[in-house]
Image 1 (cartoon, rainbow, N blue to C red):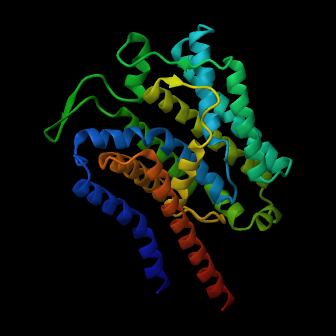
Image 2 (tube, rainbow, N blue to C red):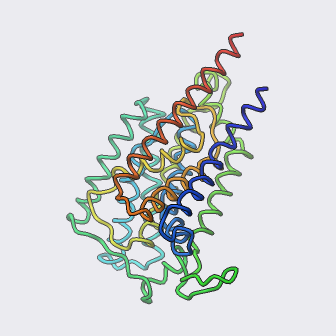
Length: 333
């Protein structure tokens, strides 16, 4: 009986994703088209990378509120290195990833070694990143080279190719290379979470941190690595954000982390820690992208996306709490 309940929970998120796509295909204006499919992919890249990283953090029972400002701060410093310091593009992009990783390290030290609550620690680094990016760029908008120029060739590597191509007889304006990168990142993260000691310890810390520590595992070290990994994925997300949007505006980014966290929770990862799925995370990310593009196809504004995403998020948390309470009752019996 319990196995049937678990199978039903696993099928819930993909079922909702399919139903959303069918609904908007019927009631939206030309939603079932190549352009909207590309828009869904474009809106998923940087959110998907952030969501992959924060899944590890949430499985440990923590949270990272600095994701969005880490992304913007990393992209700002990468653009600054390219446009003002004269760095080559490849080195500027590497800098963006390094900045994200360092911010993740800072979060890990604050949480694991200084024992700050994750909410407070990452809220602090959120504000630090928000201010530091603006200070470093003197509150000036930073721009990466536009698509189609020789300097903007990195977009062909991380966003999409410049030439149209045919897929199953459908002409598409450039191959979505970003989707391949997201798939590769998902596979790497999935292997790390499900096939390594690091992944096992991540689940163990979320299930019972103190018992994991007493068993001889160096929990502070592994918890720090979890936050560093999250920062690394935020740094990677900054590259894809720059590839899609080009202009990076200082003092922004706060709020983007909510999209990633919502995708993780909607995908079935428990906020109480100890359980989670990267497959569910990706489904949750695409659900939000489909919701956003679908509402646009119906002529509704962005505030409707926030409203409905909030409803879906609350429903996902209520479902998770129901699952936890039932599990606790079974253990008590």
